[in-house]
Amino acid sequence: MDRKVYALLTLPLISALIGYITNVVAIRLLFWPQQPINFGFFKLQGVLPKRQADIAASVGELVEERLLSLDEVIDQVNTPEVRERLVVTITDVMRDKLDSMLPRFIPPRAIQLIADALEKVVRQEADQIISQVVESVRDYLTTEIQIKQIVEDKINQFDLDELEDLVRGVASTELRFIEILGGVLGFIIGLVQMGIMILFY
Image 1 (tube, rainbow, N blue to C red):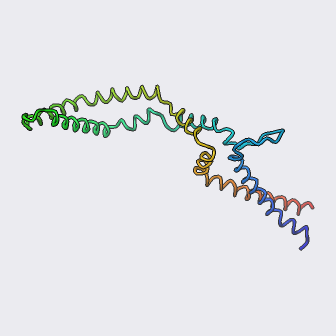
Image 2: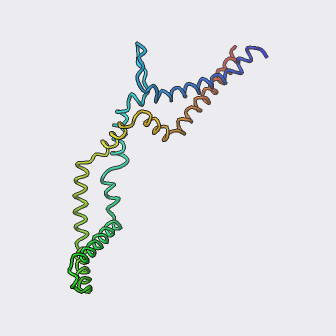
């Protein structure tokens, strides 16, 4: 086979290999090197290690503003089912305390009547009391607790290997797709180059 023809036929394969390797290296440079390497006129460091604090702040802000708020968390647990469960728990504890605290000479029937009366009061007042408690907790949490700061601190506490594992665990399929796409695009570019060379040379 003529060397020129051979070169033309291998051009798409070479371009595909270059495209694939380029994307593999680019993805690797997201995580490596973890510590900056000084080349004199510039320093090389992986994007994630270099910008870990900035990424942590951005993710924390995103989670707090777009994904999860304390108000939403409180609303999720402040449901009729949860309220009823609280009332049942309170009345059960109250009955147990009555049994253990009241003198033994008091007839069981009297204890039962007292417990029923207290349960009735609890159920009548429970909704208002729980609402007050929920709002008090809501005010405290929204004032004192910052989801953004919790997420940011957690990400900043990751060592760089843990951070890389986290990102790869979430986006391994997408990163692999980018690597393969580099090869596919390189192959297509190689075909275009081969076509141009055949037409004009």
